[in-house]
Length: 383
View 1: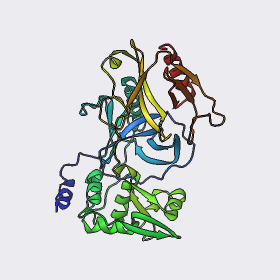
View 2: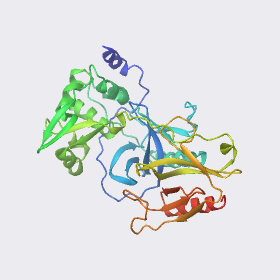
View 3: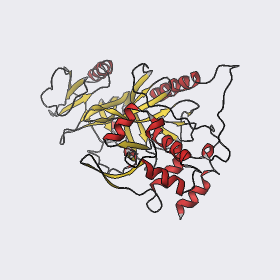
View 4: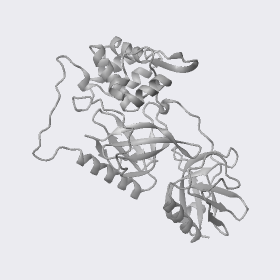
């Protein structure tokens, strides 16, 4: 099988990584202060589509969240541990995405992230680099390395390729429906099924190593717990006890592995519209005109002529999804107390509205109050 061949190559083309797969507990406290927050667009691991996520940089990790209806999910979508990470900025292998930078974790996993501007990209990379540097041992300090048992194979396994094989339609793990406390969960598998599969595919020698490898997949955000029992175990026990060889704890692949259909561009822009000087760029949440749902869009403000265009950051298409002239536009801040007329769904806050000359109303949300006021001031200068 193709996947078997891939498994045989896992240990041959893996870049040199730390020989210790660390099982750290999932942080659920608020003792750490975020170093930086904001939108970035992240490439999926298996299905290489791009999705906008809210990123929070902590001292030792980079967390990311999904936005639902304009409000950030309470459940994080993934975590990137920063210790021994390698940052490549800029990463120029994507022709239509010049604002990408890459993080390579110590487990050999690549994460591709895109910012809204060169300044934002470089600032993110600088802050992450500084955080990584602080995690390194001080000069002259000792670095202790945990030795693997004789014959252990965990030190040279590429997690991304393990996931590819695990997701393979022919030889990957079997997904099915499971019942738990009266609820049915589809396309999932048990913890013991993951351990069985890893041992059967000879990726590990023992079930203990399989539990360690499965926990590493969960730690990197490739797998996620589902069901009440798994969620409670994650909350109370942490990763080290979480992914036990358990037939009742349920898991599934990360949401980033699910293919989503693309949406056609709302309109096309003329060369004249796009000829103006770019004066401001950034990610904002925009309410749709038809479905009234909120989506992250990359907004680009131009002058001479004055236009505001917005792009779908999940697509490689360099054409705007929409835009309008700012001539005679009205822009105003909206209060966060209550839901203003014309606004639907869950609101995160920092709302403002633009009314065009043709009386079309655009509702946007900025990540912060300061960014909202900056956008309002910049737009007013072009009206």
